Length: 370
Ligand SMILES: Cc1cc2nc3c(=O)[nH]c(=O)nc-3n(C[C@H](O)[C@H](O)[C@H](O)COP(=O)(O)OP(=O)(O)OC[C@H]3O[C@@H](n4cnc5c(N)ncnc54)[C@H](O)[C@@H]3O)c2cc1C
Figure: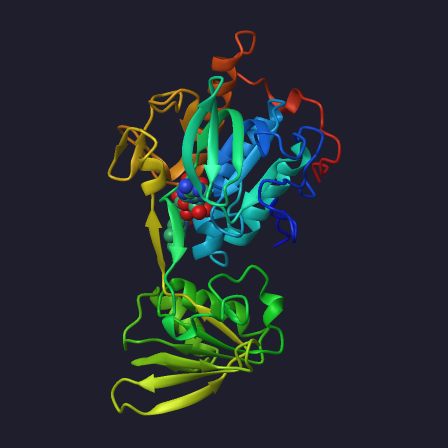
């Protein structure tokens, strides 16, 4: 997936010194030392499908956009949990791989130059001259004319693999944004759910070897998926745990030690890559502290997708209202509703209806319809 590059501090640069990412037009950035690290029309919190589509719609309405996500890559649940799965219920796509859907969404928004701030959580909400100001976990302050919260199930954090503490970025990974990185490597995948089996399917044609280690004898993954992996003769070590790792001091992981929980015997597996697919914990406590109307970890919205807070809208899995259906396609509709209503609420001359995209100019750099 060719991801947008995160807009973050360059090496040696303090978080407050904003640099323009490759997709940033740059001219809107305040000078270094200005009170805000970015000042945009629309700030989207959450780069899942709903957030990416909201970024497109804000761009289509002629607004500058920033998209903030606590994960290091865009795509929300789709990219983190099931990038290789086929999705069958997105309008216009009889079947689309999760990874491809996210790439298409990023492509659709790209002509409007959204700025991505990845790997940073939205922590606090304040107001400056009536405009929302979000402070991120890196201390960045982002001001916007309006905010759309597309936070899904909340900020999700991969469950850690304690035996490999300290190997993050040195062979331990929780996501596989680029399977080619594992070319020619021995890979150990830890876990027994859908993602673990998905990664095994994806990496077995690429890696030198793939071995799965799971602490139980039964799997949580879909039966057909398990069968596909077993048919590929991927070794699956069950009732076992990765208990230690080794590598050159300060270097990448080279091997892991696996404990058989029955016999208590330990064995060593070569591993230049370890993927911990142990699930995620989701947390919306940061959003809860803003004074939003939250019930059961979801935000109450009206028909315009406005929340109870001024200039704060929401879309996607995180919204709640009678009859809500949590699906990607519904999130798309809500994102369009949120952005278009925000535009009309802030500009008395603007209408909620954006006009038909088919009647609009093609933005510079936009891919052709082919
Ligand atoms: C295994 C699986 C299969 C699925 N299959 C389908 C399917 O076939 N069809 C379908 O329609 N749906 C499917 N879904 C559901 C679908 O993935 C969700 O409905 C969709 O991802 C919701 O999109 P979203 O943009 O609202 O939120 P998410 O995809 O959850 O994205 C939210 C993003 O917000 C970020 N975030 C949250 N809080 C903060 C914060 N405070 N600061 C910064 N970032 C934050 C998160 O890191 C995340 O990246 C499936 C889900 C799973 C788990």
